[in-house]
Length: 117
Image (spheres, rainbow, N blue to C red):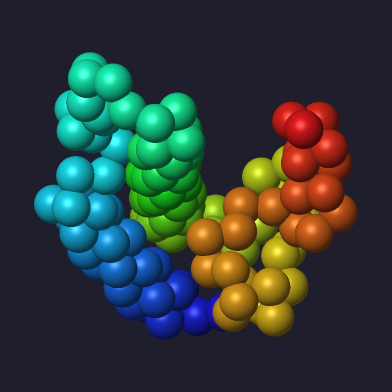
């Protein structure tokens, strides 16, 4: 994959992640201050807590995605973009076209996910 094309794609991803995060934060995602301390039906409280947990998970996922995109941009700058960070082999263009932020080949990504599961 051409690094200039990858850079454009990654920068677009950053803009989308930042926009989605800003919208979530503007809507109060992860803010549990709305939870009332007055007596509520336990189901209402559980729903509010579940919603807050889901929103926090979305924000955490956005932060993780942003970090991966920034790392890919750093690899472009360092001249190592498209090379697996674990085995040093080229990452197939087909993978980079779908996941330009990919740092590992499929085999090493599977090993990484299994080790961190």
